[in-house]
Picture 1: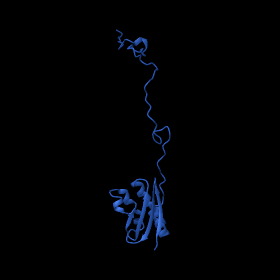
Picture 2: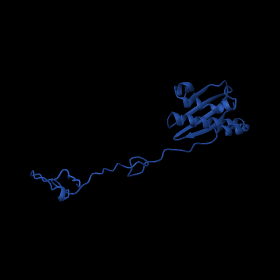
Picture 3: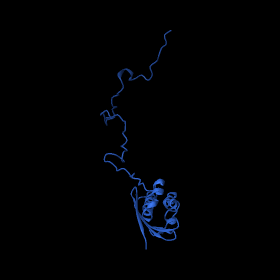
Picture 4: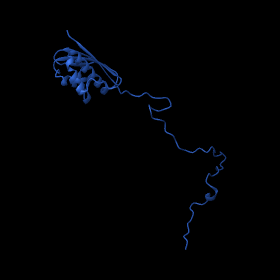
Amino acid sequence: MDQYYGTGRRKSAVARVFLRPGSGRITVNGRDFQDYFRGILVGVQALEPLKATNTAGRYDAVITVAGGGPSGQADAIKLGVARALLRVDPNFRATLKQGGYLSRDERIVERKKYGLKKARRAHRVTLRPSYGVRAPSSGVRAPSFRPATTAGVRHARRTRPS
């Protein structure tokens, strides 16, 4: 029995794709493809390499995928299917390359650095002045930090020259 294998990766997801000649059944982790990617539009894009090469109904796909979320898993499956199709027929390379199915998207989540909240997000700085003078607990008010000239005056009156 012929079997063609391809590995796909995206973010932290890894997909192992096995293509076997058959009727077009696709299972992901033992479940039906439509059931596994229920309601997720990215899941439909995972099978685009099969449509681009007109091999959609000729191969059964047994896929095991681990890690990441639904979006990363779907993109990992897409790359795995494309690489497996290259093993089926090397002449598919031009079609798959033109569609961009053979390029691995190497963007991954940047790691968190110490001293920061996230990878690049710093803690918020509070701009409260600390003068080093604490109010005494005896009920006496702390000295005012306003200049002495305007200590008791709320508004300075302007007089117009007459």
